[in-house]
Image (cartoon, rainbow, N blue to C red):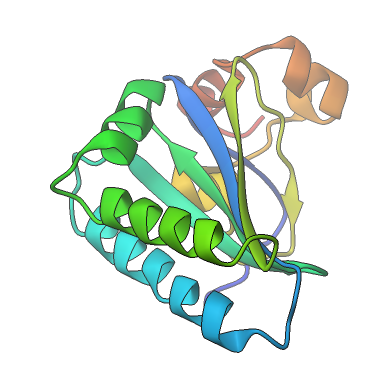
Amino acid sequence: MASINQGRMTHLWDDELVVFHIGMTVNRWWRVDQWMPLMGDMPRMLRELSVDPDSGLMGFTMLLGSRGPYLVQYWSSLDKLYAYASAPSHEHRPAWTRFNRRARKNPGIVGIWHETYVVDRAETVYVGTPPMGLPKATAVAPIPSRHDRARARVADGRTHSARAGAAGSE
């Protein structure tokens, strides 16, 4: 079991940050033959990315929505995300080809979606939680008193966390 961080914590990150949401929408749950094979593709991609420290994937969280599973991923750059998505030698391209083949043959049964956000500034707060989300993907640090309010953390921009970490708790 992950240890619980006591107190108010935030993330440390000063470089480019990309937040990528990707999910599967199951429109006909009874067609397990069509959506279940897709379920196996994402774990293979995540394994491949997780063992490659240069992939750009910093971390991820798997969630379950009312229409199917989705992931929130944190990437170190948009270029690395796009490089992975388009590389024929990696798991994504064959998975995308398989999905498109199934979708043309059996339209409307399952869908795939994604959203990409290039983040200029991020504000985070975690109280009494294990490492999770953006701090787990980057680094976690106590929130200094000058950043006690969300507005202050956002106003200080991308570098607030690095300065806060360098200065220590106040």
